Image 1: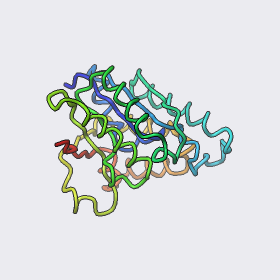
Image 2: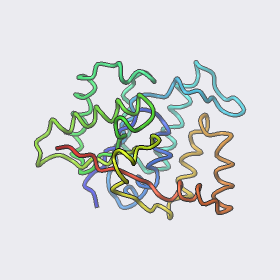
Image 3: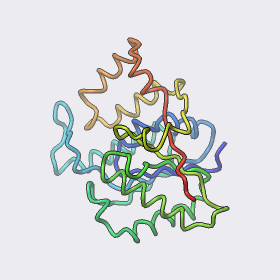
Length: 220
């Protein structure tokens, strides 16, 4: 059992696809989880299907979706940093690392979950992971939490190897689907197909929904 888990991602819904089951396994075990979400995903391409948002209303809707997802996940400590979507790499990096360091100091996590920089497809993902790693590297070696990083760029395993940790979250798969569905503006139009494939036994969808993969980031 972890002492405290800190999750740091740039966008609402980043927590849904890759780590919802893992988060549920911690919250249901009584482990406190803090989720730092850097932006509100206001530049997201999707706005519902049929449309439920426009460019002006999307930030408010995605904020509500994020809060509902956290409720479903049992996450009581949600921190919204208020950075601009698609601009994480251009923000003041020292300030961002300082803010993340402050949360780490306050929450004293034994585990941090974030993206693996360079192997997480989106520039915001990579920049977030890099800032988290730099914040942890500031700490004394004996006091550093473990970092479980998510990588999913094409061919990443050829470079960084197979994942160190594969979590079987089959018991939470249906709850994970509800967390994904909570991000309606982004997943409407695809969630029903995902559900159908899962319940019909599609191997790829079942694997995606029941196994969450992490790399233990090498800090030294």
